[in-house]
Image 1 (cartoon, one colour):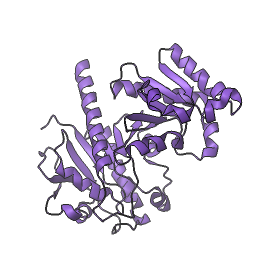
Image 2: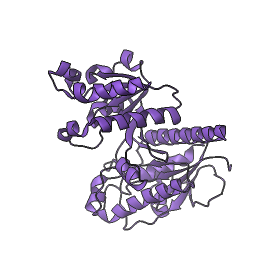
Image 3: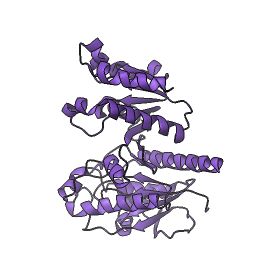
Image 4: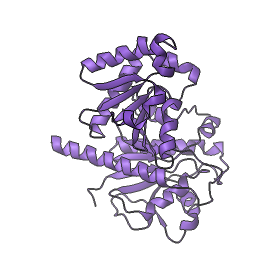
Length: 333
C-alpha cells in the first residue's frame, strides 16, 4: 500500500455540496489513498443517504485504506455551517483547506490535490480578495503564470485569459502572455498527458478570426506572429481558427487540445458536452491540481441529490497524472 499515491481532496464551501460529494469517494476503490480535508464532524453530518454505509475516521499517515471509509484530515470550522446558507465567518476556513493541501503537496506529503467548489463571494466578503482557485494556487506556489484547462466530453480546452471582464480581454492578450500560455500548455501536454508532439488548435479572438482585419486586428498583430514563432521552434499549432467552427468534430479530430482566447469562448462548449463529468486542471504549477467543473450548488446542498461524477473524474485524472509523474521519475533515475 505504501506505493500508492496519496491524493488530498479539499471539501470546499461548507454550505455547499462539496462535503456530501466527498462522502461518495468512500464507495469506490481507488488506485490511490484519498485524504479529505475538512471538518470531520461536518463531513459526518453530511453523509445523508450514505449514513450507515460510509464510516468517517481521522486520517493517520501510513494507515491502510479501508473499504467504505472516508479518511479525513480534520480542520475545524470557524463557525457552524448550515447547508445552503454560506457564512463569511467560514471564508478563512475554506482558504485554510487550500493552504493545507498546497503545503502538503509542496512537502511531498500529497502527490496531488483535488478541489471541491468554493464560493468566491463568501471568501471576498470575509475580507480576502479571491478571484478563483487557479489564481490562488499560482500565488501560493510562487508560480508567475499558470494556465486553466478543462478536460471532458472528449476535449481538452485551455484558456489564454481566465476570469476577466470581456472588455479587458483584448488588452490582456499580449504577445508575451500568449506565447507563455502556449509554452506551458505544450509542456504539460507532453509531461502530464503523454502527448509526444501535441497538436494544439488555437482560436481567434474576434468573429470569423477577424475576417482578415475587418472585424479586429488581434489575429494579425498578436496571435499569428506568436504562432509563427513557435511553429519555427517545432510546435504543431493550427490557427487562428474561427471559434464558431473550431468545435465541430472534423476540426477537433485534428488536434489534441484547444486554446480558447477567453473563458466563455471555449468553456460553454466543453461544459455542454461534459457537464457533471468535466475536470478543471491547472497547468504550469509545480504540483498536480484538478477540480470539479461546477459550483457549490447551494440550492441542493444537504439534499443528498448531488452527482459526484465530476469529482470522481477529477480524482481519476489526478491519480493518472500522479502515476505518470512517478513513472517518468523512475524512468529517469
